[in-house]
Length: 80
Ligand code: FES
Image 1 (tube, protein in one colour):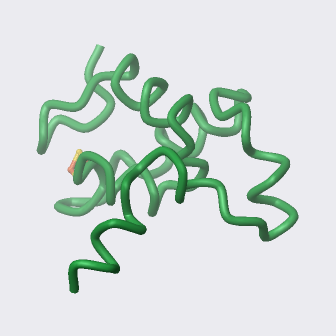
Image 2 (cartoon, rainbow, N blue to C red):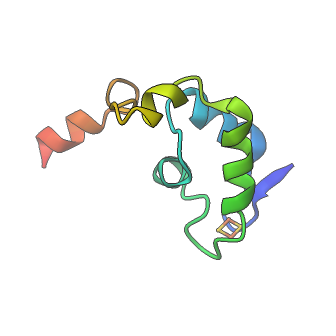
């Protein structure tokens, strides 16, 4: 079932990104653009994240970095 029809993102895809460390709608948007067009899916994404799809959520809640080791963002920063 689609969560974000603007970008054709499914609940499975959102869950996969959450497993990979995306714990907020913003991080999901960085990963797959879901939520960055009409925005009507953001609540659905929040609901999926709120159901514990992200195992690193506790780290995120503590303000600790959770994406660095999984997303390759560090490499992007170094290249910039
Ligand atoms: S449905 Fe996700 S941005 Fe429009």
